[in-house]
Length: 313
Image 1 (cartoon, rainbow, N blue to C red):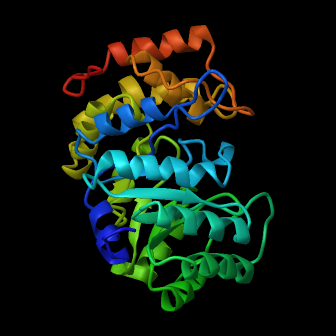
Image 2 (cartoon, one colour; image 1 turned 135 degrees about the vertical axis):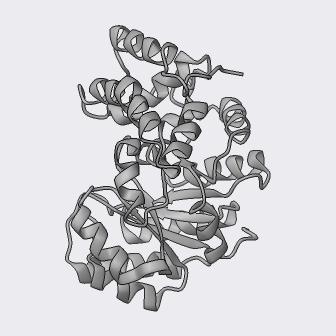
Image 3 (cartoon, rainbow, N blue to C red; image 1 turned 90 degrees about the vertical axis):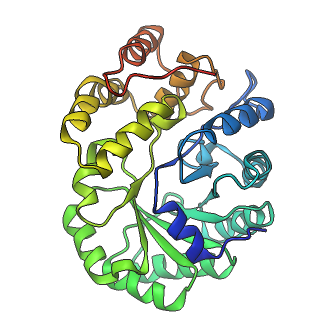
């Protein structure tokens, strides 16, 4: 059980960079616990405000409801309180509640509620879904606004009144007008997280809208780059930011956009580049080709100064 209140968790993660560690698999797609422990211990050595176990980059959608609490429990055990550990939950309401209870028991400090499986619904139904998950746990909950789960400001406000442990809002759609309306209505009632794929591209404009943190997928394999880039964003160091975007982030996005599902695949490929191979992605995702892997390796080898210092340990 977490020792942090929902509000303490929200304040903590709002002060720094966040990331979603990959979930390592063996050749037969079974969970590779030893590699996961090694990766989590390594990432805790960097300046990170929170790690999301079994999240999107951790292939939550490919894990069973039993595997998620197990992966989260390993993350909690290995991090040993050095950083907050948050967990993914999702699918239908009943399954989301079941996973939420399991990860709370495993020691998670908070939840990221991913969109419901497949179906679209009205605001009333989405609100009932969020409220049911919040009521199933005592730890803090962050809603992930994306795809088929777009909460409008009035709906979010009503949920915040009914759910004291609803403490975070993660934006995954890039609608600046909606983000502005949400922040204007809710103010500091929530902690706001940038959650678009390759969030570095939106980090600076979102900072001016009250989004103090974001989740960096590339932190998995270039944590030094990711933390330095985040520091540049907070300092509004435009020269360093633009160098990082031009010479690393945007070329990486060009590779990522070639095939569906590469937002996760390219991160696992990055782990292999630095000597921390974490296995393949589970189907239905596919791994990068050999040529694409070589392109990614070249990008990592030529990270721009002053963001260049990076080596696997």
